[in-house]
Image (cartoon, rainbow, N blue to C red; front, side, top):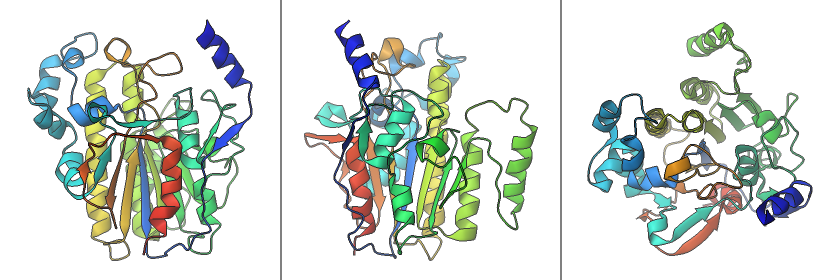
Length: 350
């Protein structure tokens, strides 16, 4: 009951608790940043691979034998590498991975709701707005880092966002056409001289019978983002995948693992792509994270205020000026809002 009362109180508050952020520091135009999110992907799978209690449970898998053939190994190190090969073959060797609670290397959302809108708002605004307590099509009145960067002389016209979830125009307060490129959900790609891939995406989305689905396939989001990068060479890119969260809510653990593996593959492909482009080679940094955690074994598919484990997240860094510490094993506590202050710091590196 006390928890319910607290939740109701927080829902009626309009106070924002902000992190200190300074985008006035000298930004280096040579620096490029890719912020990538995997919606509702648990730290447990990232650091330990598939969960034995879930992958063996027929309630959550259509084919447990196939899921185990793809993602299971008795050794946790091998298991996580099978699930997220790019993370553990590249990021773990060349970058940094935060959030393995086995070592008390803790990352959490600071907002109490552990839902997507509050989580993305915290990440992109650097603040916890207690009045943002659910996922709804409501304008976010807080300033976000993408808009702020786009208003600088360094990155004006060089910011773009591609998301699978349709609510980002509200999270980023861009219901109308705004200052930076944003393509979300089943939104049509509107650009001069569309490439064949962009035209294909528009055609596929036009043929989807249910236009009320809140997300599109991550693969379409990724291709849309990749095509924009090839044509326009943006300096700051936000790319948000939703497949893991969709599978979680559908109680499909095998699909959840597949979506995570797909995201890992696309992130790896994007990394190799940008390293092959002179505008990005040796200049790009990847910041990869999630918007919230999920429940434990019994309710892994759920998340929120009353679901234990939902606030537990993680993040990874790879690229320009990132020290290759690999998996971080020092005791620490980082909050999602802290990552927002990291963004201008990355972009100001010399």
